[in-house]
Image (cartoon, rainbow over all chains, first blue to last red; front, side):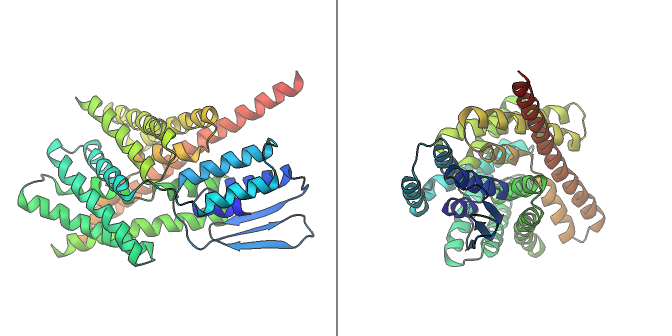
Length: 236
Length: 149
């Protein structure tokens, strides 16, 4: 159950979550575990007639590291290398553990990604640096706004607004050549690529509810980014 | 310098996304490699005159194939590799053009771009799905072979 919660918070695919919970339950000798997961909550019962446990998932972030770790733990459980208490202890430790790359590294990565995408979409090397700066500052803006406001939508809107303004600034001061290329590159770190792939994979696995809701989440994010850029373009 | 620059930038971009998504440190290189492979296939196909939609399908397929291999070899969830690998193929530029056209009241182009974005996203989905299906078939066939022997 805790494994499922951790995995959902880190936005794993729901079918992987259900699969993991079932495997762990089976490894502990439960013959007929029933699990049902959506991006916002999980149900789990030990048997068909038993009482069901329910858990609400309040916040969702992206954390591939934890997904990999839960995966490792569940493999060890299935292979009988961990007892119930040990497994619970290690999962609890993982849950309270806030292992993230430091913000500076993340912003640096975002900046590099932005610059590289500018080149990949046919931009010139002159636009590399402006895109890096715009992408980095935009991502930093998103992180700080997200800390103030709990709504991811708003944070993404502000980030793309900042990017749009910066890109426009670079063009008018003559540091950048093509507005489009800079904006496209700088916006890429915000693009909800993970949600799109997850939505598709969930839909393929037959989890229609989860797939559709993740698709909507991705669309909302894309819309927020578009709105931010559009606001800049409309007023300048 | 064309292809070399593309190789390097796509590798850095995919690995950078691995950092943004907090992928385990030891799998960053593989993330970058998967992204690079998918993007280069797409890039070469487009350069040789293929339409971007089928090119995206093939790119996504290659990404998925490599991800499956890496997931098997390193015993990590496949999602780590697919997510960062697929990023370069996401039609961000096209989506931006669509949004821009909407803002300047150019609905004719806007709808065209939007349709293209939908097709490209569908192409990614088909590419990913195809290799998933292939993987399942291979797994079932090998299981059956094992049972028979």
